Length: 212
Image (cartoon, rainbow, N blue to C red):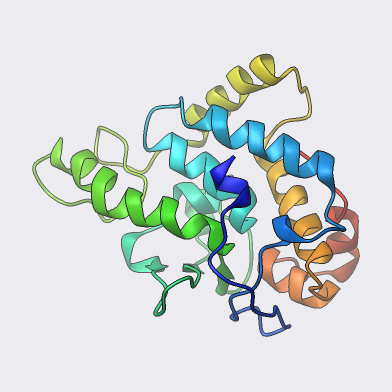
């Protein structure tokens, strides 16, 4: 599956979390079953209508909470400066919208997600905003102009659970999968902790080796 196997070039991940890397999909020691499950998941997400499709594919590539993804603003999304680089997302806690966390953080999207986000922002997003005749401040806008709702995303996950036969498929499982991929790519526990927005390394330790 292209979403899983394509990668621009090999670099090195370090603990700054802002350096583009060879994606963990390409590592021989990466969990094969996890890769296979994510490949099937991504392929099925393409059948989901936008903007939910891109949002759902973004979750295991970024480790975002579903509430954080739903609440992303265009100003929070930063494309790579160089070819083959990664998008960076500013996550800004907003308790009124149900976003956990006590501090702002920056999240790096695995570089295999760059073509997906490029296509979405250039081709899909303008058509969604066009339904209302003007651009939306939200990355994933609903038809009524508000950001997509967690309830709608949850319904799509329920549908995919039936198709995949996986009762454990959920947005939270995508965060666990992301943590495992980063660990296999050589990220330190504390780097993963910062990426996921955890306050405790003990919490992060429970996330690694999760699966979708």
